[in-house]
Image 1 (tube, rainbow, N blue to C red):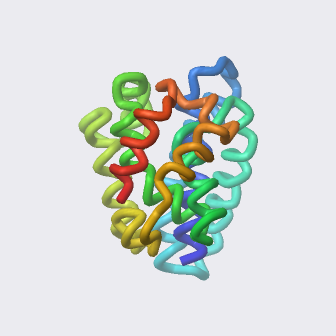
Image 2: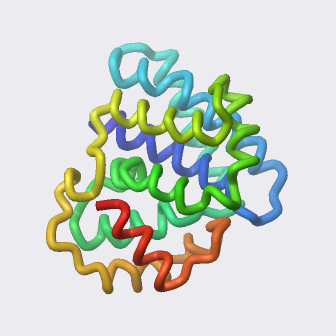
Length: 190
């Protein structure tokens, strides 16, 4: 499960950097290629732990994500940070769990951009194909379907919302995060 969680963390870094509204063309390209490396190698690294080529490519994707997120992170991390701190969930796995709800939340701002990313990754269907790809990848990796399935029970929604809005990552989200829409986004993650 560490391979799955850390692999999806690398993907989240690249995805959020790619979707960030901030200007950083080099990070934009690095993020896109990092997503491709994860898309092409994470399932193999997960299913065949001894495949050193897949693991090397995942290592490169993780490094690329760390470079790319100079451009910014977003709501995935803004939510994942307080959830992890308060409920002791694995960071990368939490990122994976909230990824699809955040994609829905940001759709109006990233639909065209993610359609281009989907084409580069060889995923048909534009934004919807990209969204479905994330769901299928999570399922293949055994990622829980929502935060409740991850083990977050009786969440303090007010505290999580306030912490998410205080997290520096929310400044890189392509849709402005407010108390109202962040609370609704958080609720959709359970």
